[in-house]
Image 1 (cartoon, rainbow, N blue to C red):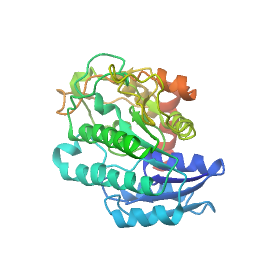
Image 2 (image 1 turned 30 degrees about the vertical axis):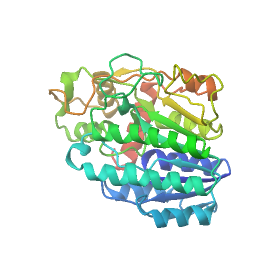
Image 3 (image 1 turned 90 degrees about the vertical axis):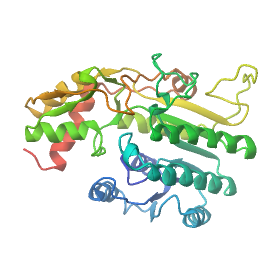
Image 4 (image 1 turned 120 degrees about the vertical axis):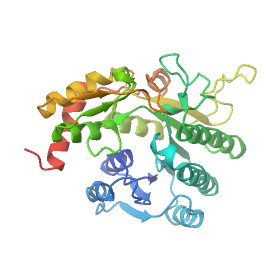
Length: 336
């Protein structure tokens, strides 16, 4: 297939692009290469497949409607995976405008391009952050998500609503995937695995929020990519059992779906840190701090709908995943 991937130089986008190319798809990647974190890491990810004969790349911002429209018209993708976004809960407290431009303006540009390009299926990144103040675990796509606790979460909830509108008005099949704490090789420097690794290597204390009482549904990147591809290959369809008198937030009478994509096995944050220390061969001080604004104490994905519909089955244990991440980290940073 011809697949357009936005955020192709990002953590998940690069891993997905490599997998799509390996199975024979033609991929056009779009990324703005911004400096939210070190662009050198993005360039290193791209270098793994940039010269592949079935890959082309465009440096452009999703908020540039003309550039996005031209890219779609030239490549004529059959399917689209939108992973480009301004990420980060904490950064949204300092720079909210970045989220409006990338996650709202940018996303409507993608929706418009998909509509006019008659794209067969749009798969887009949502986030576990949409569950916000919810406390019922595990988080289910059938739960209401009307109480976001960060602008980042609100922007992802808005994406789901915008996608439904296009599915309803124009028959565009859309599937939103709520990612749960993705980690692994080539990960983002602003996320806890990379931050923990850096501090452990340097022997510096780790800041542990919520006094260490967090748990997270850590999901290995290869499992995420497998789920994205399985979803991409199953375009959303209208739910014949959808009842407008008792609406299910995860489906619709339009070709629209929402899924959680996680490991379905929450891990205490302190256990994750312990595994990092074991694999890096040293222990460090933990500074126990209060909960940060915009954060949530626990996440846990109910992935039963994704298992049922596309056969999603994450199989990387936290022990395997942390070891693979640390092995990559050592190699990338030339550590003994």
